Length: 242
Image (tube, rainbow, N blue to C red; front, side, top):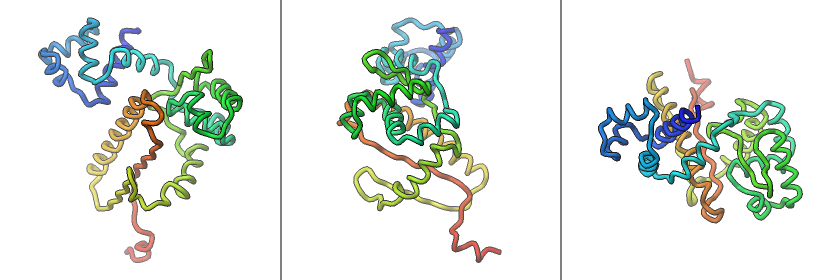
């Protein structure tokens, strides 16, 4: 079972990196058929696995860490858990921070929250099964890479208010800022193509976020990315519609 889980993890990373069996065959100087047989038989030498990791631009140790982090993960919280988070600003702050791979020292130095308060919040997150609080206050995330808030749940509604009142209230012309809005008439097929590309970008966002978690805090900055697509028309046009 563990071997199968390791191979599944390997396939997941390859998909995230958009690497095909053909790409592996070229990089490993093997035929594509042999690569497929290797995955089907689930038999990899350590040297072969390390070579594949190099093609994925990651260390072998990073691969095993990624595998460990994705085991026994939760993909979403309950309504009650989200309500508890959104009812306590400090708790929500610490929850978002640990999801961004910040440790205790990072949180305390970055925000107006004492070490004692932070540890109390971490203990609550451990009780909510969002993290495992380890000795020396080390943090192990229990949320999956594909974790998401409940659709129209307490936290999504909370962030929706913040987006409307703060995030969109900007000119989007500064450094690392960009806003692009397009509209047009599309077929159902084209709309689905756009939605699939949005999902691919969301997966790439998650993968880059995981990679950059290893960087020191002074090399990272908070970024918000909003993607939206829906049937839409300017409100002022509606009275003119036939």
